[in-house]
Length: 462
Image 1 (cartoon, rainbow, N blue to C red):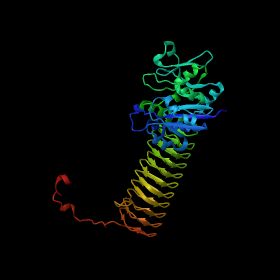
Image 2: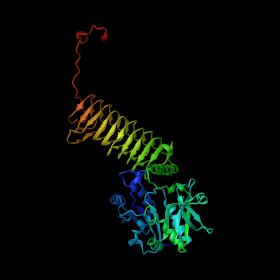
Image 3: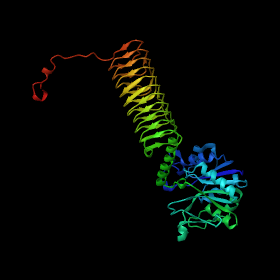
Image 4: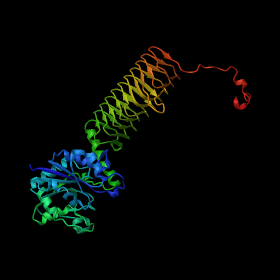
């Protein structure tokens, strides 16, 4: 098998995106477009990957790091000019070179592999990746010879009426004999309205030299979408999410309404988990088996073990262990760790806190910067007062403790095992084992208070 090389074109400015973010860094399903391309290319295990960078070069390098070599296209003078920038590294090598754009996130490694194999089988100088388009308007049409090789690529504006009826179109992805590619690049002219050097002209030059130009037609036209504006970006997002959701469903995950379920690339989900509509799962989230992720939930960089139930809640960079449940309308913030069989009810917030097995935090409670042991009951409206305006303080709550409703724990507090806080208390000191802390003013009833009011006899007060 011949050596394989890949050139990723990632130097375009992307002005039509109207964004401060460099075009190939725009995310599709939580992953930058150029990263999608790189991930698929890496599966081919090529001998060398060259990425042509330009505007925003440093940010592309920060993202892809040492997964590729980089060359800089200082001036954007067209796709042929971009490929020519790799000549120092690739120009004299024997083998096949795949040229792909960094703004085409939907192509798969399988498609690239098929293109390489077809190119090699046909002994072609160049092979164009094509697809059948239902509506080919604006695409370059592939005109074939009687033997199936490519006669020419004709653009919409130059096509005859008969050529406009052709539905096989150029996707902009090419495979070349590497040595012939670089020889031909020096012959490309820029005598066009834009004054740029275009890569498709290489195929024309090779054809004129009597070399074979082939075309490999893939089955899935949707892969060929290039993202040049926000409309195309939204279409790519939709197609990528459909692909991701189908993979999860084939792996045994139930998506109640796949069209309204948003799962990023790279998310892991176990079988027999059910995900209801309007759920967003992103980042490096991992979800176990037999879980329920209820409508309206949002998970980001979360670790969710088996048999967990989340209802209309948010989990960010937090862990939920087996059998725990959350919500509705609660929020686990970064560094929250919820133990096994823990119940976190409605309208609760947990941040930088560890909650031990079988502990219950029912409702309307804030737990921040604290470690709670096992088998604790936390009443309604409890607040861990962890911030004094300068520093965050930590509290520790022992096993089998009870915190009464509407209590404030002014950190730092050490609460021993089997201790008790009476409802309505404000706790500022440590509590020993088996003790009950009461920190509230004793109730006083004012006798005959009503009759002493100036308006007590008024009809409005009765």
